[in-house]
Image (cartoon, rainbow, N blue to C red; front, side, top):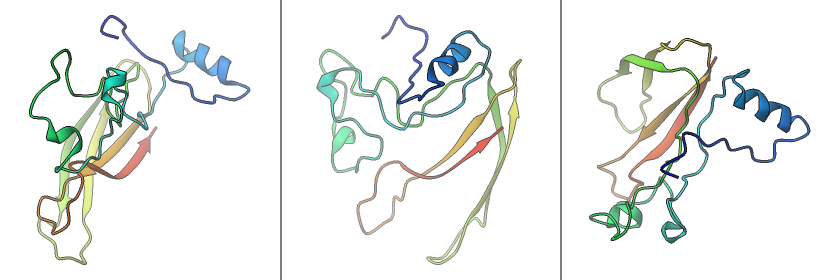
Length: 146
């Protein structure tokens, strides 16, 4: 996998799937999206998932395996397109909350590439002060932008 430049995953693409895949491969369409799973480097890493608890799973390992990294080849939520995006001016309001409060988050996103594209913004949290063990990384929201 170290020598390839990209992976195009098309799960159950349906009747027009071949046309859609061809459009992406030939640059007629700019794909947007993020991986719904983590891709392991080797079958020896299975299972590999992003939202493990700090008391076990991948966070338990203090370093890499003897012959490879302990990190997945492609992580949950990873994705590329033919363009690039810049994230700026993230605002989280209010700065401190109570148990029943809500948080509002805003961010400016700009397409900095040379072609049009879609972006999926992902919001992850980590609760470091919970009385119950929580995942080290937890997807709490996402929003697609054209």
